[in-house]
Length: 242
Image (tube, rainbow, N blue to C red; front, side, top):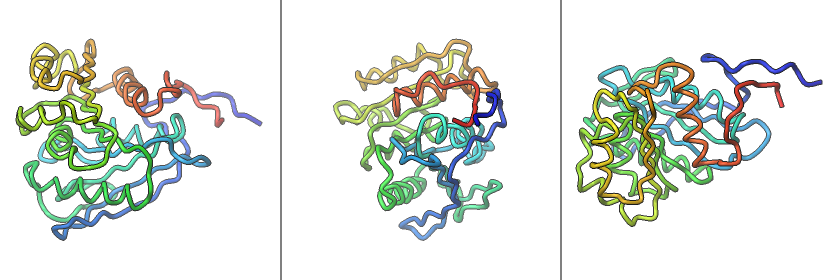
């Protein structure tokens, strides 16, 4: 018997197979994380989530990434791999090492991508937020990914040369830029991303860098799912256990 639909709210956790995992980098660091999978079906695609700046409170539970893990295995048949970059603590635990200024984190991404390959997870996409977008831009092309989705990209650490390398790469690049971003707003972002003419550029009206509130979170999650599993959008706003 199907339960009455319930509204999906900020803290809603939908069913998934959740596994605490460890990633092991090629420079000897152990990272902690979680893999979330659909309950009864194989995933159609995979999110590799790269979190915001650790020195400003970013971690694997930063809210957009946590809500992706809590909702998207059930709503969109996606696998969601989240992990703490080196030196970062969350309720899951603390990753070894210390903050690498966006350079040593290349080893963290490589470890995550080895895990994806070892588990046979399909169609991996990098989903970076703020600092995570820098890691995606700088090092994503080294790995077999379908593309990268950049949430609030500040373009502080990634150089124009590193960004331009995505042009003609065959990897999709999606920039989701808040209208009221603290660091890079749509007009300037369009100029910066012009070095990759095929960039899918999304300016979010009234959006802010931290995507606070259910309206902004839902918009971001729908933009992600529209690329990884278009058949699942728009995402439902209620859950009945189906």
